[in-house]
Image (cartoon, rainbow, N blue to C red):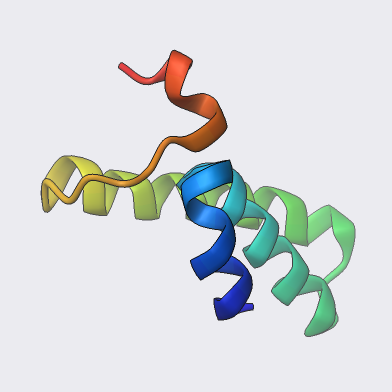
Amino acid sequence: GLLFYVFAVDMLGFHITAAALLLAWSRLLGASWRLALPVSLAATMVIHLAFYKLLKVPLPWGLLERFAF
């Protein structure tokens, strides 16, 4: 999972990569789709807010760069 993140984050961006990784890990650990999907999306947004807004750490936007604000 971490190797996927390292190699994919610059091209796909943090949001897509983190959400996909969290979703995959949740499903592998036995969570249902009903739980894994919203939790992975919410966790990605919380992590983004913590790093990008509070800590001022730039995260790669990747495919979503045109929507960055």
